[in-house]
Image 1 (spheres, rainbow, N blue to C red):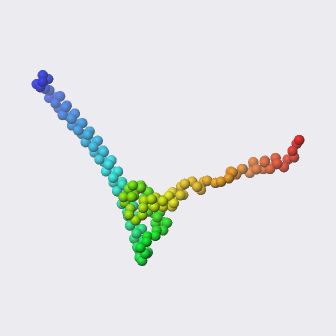
Image 2: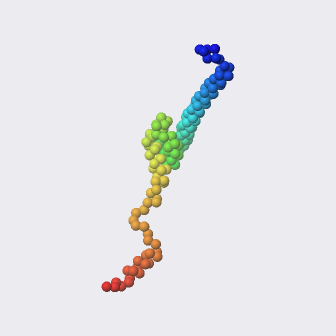
Image 3: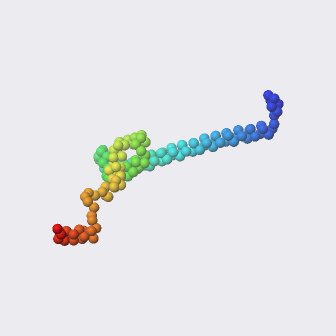
Length: 149
């Protein structure tokens, strides 16, 4: 008997089970949070590794072709490949990753070489829309008819 309340084994067991369940739920929530964070960090690291691999491929191509020049001149296909990988990283992670080119330069390559074909400029046209042929014929007939005064 504790503080005038009789002690029951059933209450003690159910309280212990309840504490285990609550602590288990806290552990599950903690593990879920840790899993989400790990997945996010793993994705970022994977993207950084892909970008750095592509940068290394491009540098190897440059070294193989141009052994005597120090300046790195990339072709449009090399810029495009690098820009695609860089776009997935984002500006902040790219600024921490790259040393050869500035993030603004690489994002500019993306806008110039890749995003240009999706801007909708091919669908834009100036001037009036074409009138269908039957309507053109009706308009011409009405112009050729004499005016009745």
